[in-house]
Image (cartoon, rainbow, N blue to C red):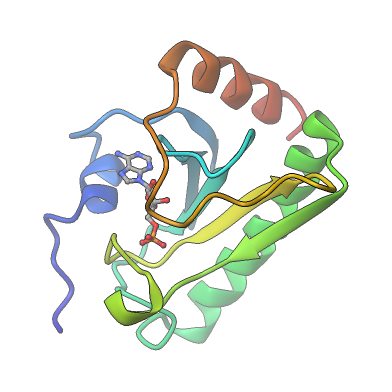
Length: 139
Ligand code: AMP
């Protein structure tokens, strides 16, 4: 499938849709997931247009995973979870719903069930804005 420049994350990158921004550099953009699977659920995307892991050139992928590590450290520092889940889905059959490659950073706590991917409610914008600021302050 060809990359669709009208996907939601492409629109966020172009500033056509709002986002609770956490981090940005020349290669990546990071923001809060608005249907969070848990407190602190953060996304990291490349600025390069690529649908999935198979389409992203290696140097852009290297930048993306390094930025994911950097943002994950900040997320861990803010929320002090028991663990941090890093997830990435390729193709609708694998659970991908937005076709611009992204890594999920999801803080996890012992005993807390992980809600199903794509089955969560809309997060509260005021709370997401506070979380984005807290994470950004650690970067
Ligand atoms: P995936 O299902 O792996 O493609 O992940 C897409 C993620 O994007 C889901 O976790 C959604 O909750 C999230 N999402 C969808 N629309 C937006 C948006 N406008 N801003 C932030 N996150 C979004």
